[in-house]
Length: 254
Image 1 (cartoon, rainbow, N blue to C red):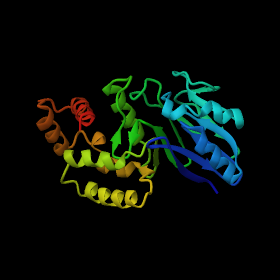
Image 2 (image 1 turned 60 degrees about the horizontal axis):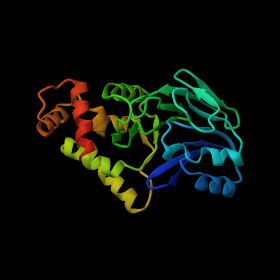
Image 3 (image 1 turned 90 degrees about the horizontal axis):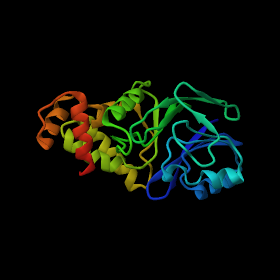
Image 4 (image 1 turned 30 degrees about the horizontal axis):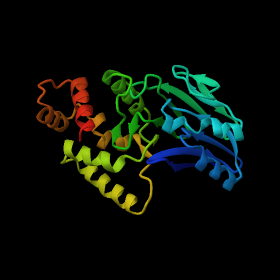
């Protein structure tokens, strides 16, 4: 049986761990300590580390982790990550025989130029590109790149689980409600998220169909989103990339 859990780390990061009774794969270990505790508590051997991008809150724990639990570390060939030893890019397939799973790699630049996602085990591990009801900031790439990356992700099957890197869903929904206040599915999602957070529970994973119906960054062709962005930003353009660019800028200062 494959278990997938978020390990809370740092301020609001999630380190995802996939494991059976004996082995584990860890995604984006920004801090080694909680992962080492988890491995010890559950008596697990580390089979692999998957890194989505180079930001420290996603990779700072890699070297300490593999020093104590030697394992292959997969990372984007367009980025430099300390202790990374298996560079990957879109089209590559990673086989994890210990867990009997495979991951396919997608290039999803925008948040960083070398950001990758790993698709497997019924889900997509997408780092800081797609969030619950939001998307990542543009630190290195362009709005065109990020929009294209998001389109790759939402082209995955609707039931694909979305495992992202931060617990941002509640705040993202507040912004989404400002963009699309009459979206009934968004109102319902907000109510469910508030219950989860009040109980100290994660709001993730999400899934692709839920994101398509509630995430404003995936809904830039919707009349309500276009109207809200034009009113907020005073832009006249209504093409998808102009709306997306203005929407991301609005979220930065929301």
